[in-house]
Length: 301
Image (cartoon, rainbow, N blue to C red; front, top):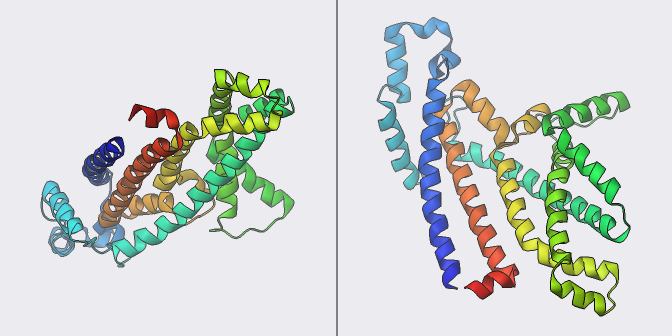
């Protein structure tokens, strides 16, 4: 129990640190890019100094950057996320809608990737298909997710299959295919380690079938595997930028690109806030689940 509370406190402190660093980096990086919000919104016609000063004062862009950032931090603490400069909508509503879409994509992609990895590991152990499963994993890891997306897009065109842009189906398939190679390798390594443990020799002596031996090894491997999977979930939510852009999926990755393109600083900061919260929450969840699922960790508490 003590270890659990220590992990929660450490997670909260990490959350605070990640929140401050992420929002600062995103905000200052956006301001370093060529172009600005006023030019994006009103064009070059309003680039005259008097008009520009009026618009900057109206949008709150006429004060030093660090004061803008501190002001944002203060408002976030009271639940004021601001208004999107480009869309004119509340930042929280805009970001939360995209976040739900990315969360759905991340969760389903994690489930499908894990299911495929477990199936491949099972076939490798019980059916002696190790060469075939290794080949599948190698092909998966040798091609980036963006290229898998392009290949799937071409395949759809050639097959004359119509899937509307914005659908979760194609990004889900792309991320599953791209993730199988890495996570199968991780799971296979953990299962091989489990099979070499002394307690597995006891189960073999009991005459357990290969299927039951595999389930015992899988139970041993899952805690560490879940930690790795949760990290990938965070990466997908933070921005499967290429995949979401290719298939026009309205998630956090596409929101980040759109906000950078329009120099929508409140949205960029809102994106940074929710991503910071998500990554910290996933790290805490991973530690807690490992404490619960892994008896070796509980013995060290």
